Image (cartoon, rainbow, N blue to C red; front, side, top):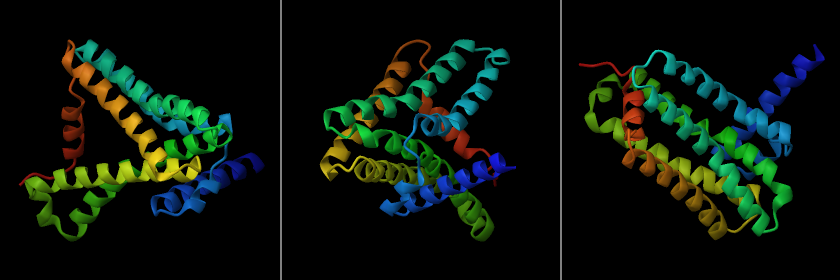
Amino acid sequence: MISSFNKSNAAWRIFQGMILLAAGRREGMIYFEGTVDAFYTSLAPWLAFLIVDSCQIFVQSNKMIVAIKLLLSFCVLLLPAVISQVYATKWSCTPLWLRYITAATWCNWVTVLVPLLTVILILSFLPHLIHQPILMKIILVTVALYGVWLQWFIARVGLSISRWRAAVLYATILCASVLLYVIVALLPPHYVALTDVLQHHSIGVPKK
């Protein structure tokens, strides 16, 4: 019973921290623990999704594409931790790194949930707008820009670094991620991740 209570309390604290950071409140950082176990816990839901996705390799005809997609997702998931740890060491803020990367990993869910909630709200109150071809593009671009700001903000407050250093850190992560996507798109079997993203976001949107 106590263990269950502690887990629910920890989950509530994480949720509170995510909401506060998503709203630009720096005090949200204190709701995250700066331990190795906390970081592993933040990775767990993403790894669970990758494990579920890996089952596709048994049913899809193009197994190479599925394998590359899984490997790419795994690399992109761990890339922020690797790059930020290098910068944290260089800038002498290593003691703050575990709390920062834990918060950053949890807050990735914000950019997943925001477009979903946006579509639900539009379907509920302005359903005629969902048929506008440009609407989904506007949502995706807006969420992407918000995601960049959010990760920049978390880096700034989490590592206690300047605006410019936070920008350099996230720009490096972003460029490295884009480079990985470009490499897998150019090399055989030419997996284009953007196609998957657009297809996934169109699921559940009713047709005329």
